Image (cartoon, rainbow, N blue to C red):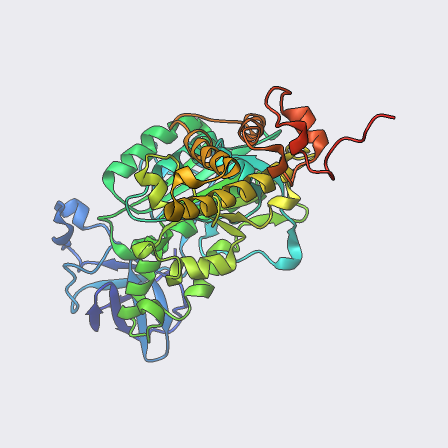
Length: 487
């Protein structure tokens, strides 16, 4: 392998090293930082053998005068005058093959499971490219996550980008594990999950590894730990997406990519931006945060002429639960909706604490109903939204006038809301509901309300899915919905 080697570093600033300009070095080229001949890096707390391993980096700025290198493993222990920089003449790559299924890798694509390297002649640049809009196929087909609130109200569609907005301390990692373990594309056996943990704690990493073993050979796991170098987090989602692109567009699989936590990625991006001396934008994030996130999110989708697909489910924690923070704000512009976790529901013991009202799936209308889920799905979803929204209004009224002063219909709405949160939004941590079960549960809940309140479902569907002993009194039926009188 041809390479260029340079001895001596001019300047070290955090994860950044500066070198004099070297002819032939390109942007994004992989760099190995090595100790002087016969020496080793005593930092990192390891042995001489461990410390001797080269530290991987990449050229992030190139000019005739200087080269700026981002070092993934950090710069602790580097001696500027004697350390060597070896430019390898290639970008960051990952070795790919069918054998990556069932494997676990670190944040830079190196095997962690003790099964040795991936033996293949297929190597891909992890930086990738967003999918050309002209090459996209409009996302269709329903993905069953096993959660009623998602499947009925905020439906995930194959090829969609649907983020989960969470907060510190909320059970988003447990939710991610369950979705990764039980999600399925109805009618498709070639379904796989690529799961990437970015800046995760060791106990979370252990939980991911043990719980996701249920996926077996249909899972690829990438782990970047909280005590790994911060800058490594920038590469981890790209390794995961490159693996997903291979599975989807080379092997024809339908791939669900789950990345947690995108906020950790953005904070690493901010740290790198500060080290490079760039002018900060909102909250200190770089001005190119939007385009950088888009370079990740827009790699998901369905391609013309390709059998496979990539569905992206990024998870991000909102600092101080602020949905206007740049990370969720910019994410919302790029993606097709959001699933929002509620701290209030979590405090009441509801799991998963998904708040249906601020949650949204912009593509669900074209992937549900007849031919996809069930013909009553669109109207039931709309009716549940309307009823739960009315519950919030009644709660606010009850705080003013007292519950005893409410009318019978308002009390029925409150009872509906309590049951909706207790049995519909909340479900067991191992409970996996299919779409038929979730829709049937929806009708049982709606049956507790007066028929006059069910303005978004048809009489035919009510007669079909609500048992006669559950239905409201005939005089409650609005005139427009009442069955025609017999002649």
